[in-house]
Image (cartoon, rainbow, N blue to C red; front, side, top):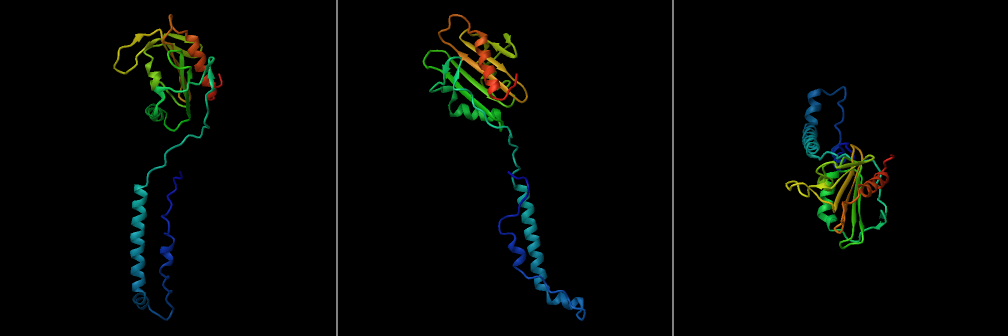
Length: 216
């Protein structure tokens, strides 16, 4: 959207609607010329006043252009850690996507869930070219339990802002965030007998990080 204040459509016809007064000849006096063109001068002044006020009001009320990202979009891979794209994901409903758009703003972002459904293991991955710290499911992380390279992971989760954090072996959150690029992975395995390996979530984060343009 351009930030240049353009005139309303059709405004160019206002000047041509009334002919310009003919300049006075050397033989005519200034008063005579003013008297002869008084109507045209009055109408012209009214047009300028109304039109000028209209433009000022229009410029004052015109919404400001919103900054948009120049980074190209990106997509996450169709499979992750041997799991296919999940056919349906209740967490990624229309309301979740609206919340995600609010959190991300105008920056490029992508999400995808992987798994076979039911009670089998699933991985939900989100990446964006902005800082996702404390946003969406990354906010589930109540602490940093372990570090795998540049990726932080934890089983210590808080599913709502007001709930009590506790260790959940069947839930793992891993993330890597920064001012211009972030990625996180939520791994859920209801049948896990031992805590989900941090390496599994970290691998998903690194894959998403590179898909979003990360170089290391």
